Image (cartoon, rainbow, N blue to C red):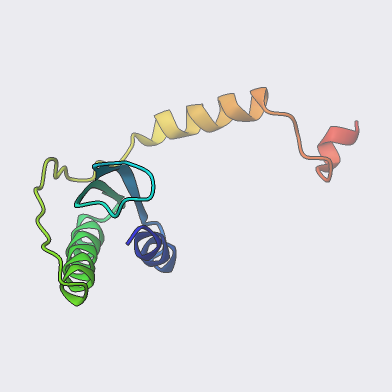
Length: 112
């Protein structure tokens, strides 16, 4: 399922989707886990795109579980609307980074 999350995220411009935490029980070597818990973090500047991605990924997980004869449960812990970052703050951050980061070798300005 982790690979499916990554594949989905790469197919949607601007989408970030990760499995943030994975816990398997009993967690012993050479033992098939009886239970697995994971967190799914999904971000996008468009709430519509983000919510569609969450719904699609949850449906995919349900399908994977069903195909393998497993149960699937989920709990939404945090569902926060996207917030546009303040433009002057973005511009100030970019200026500060440009002053601190070395210029790439192909940058003509770095040759002076």
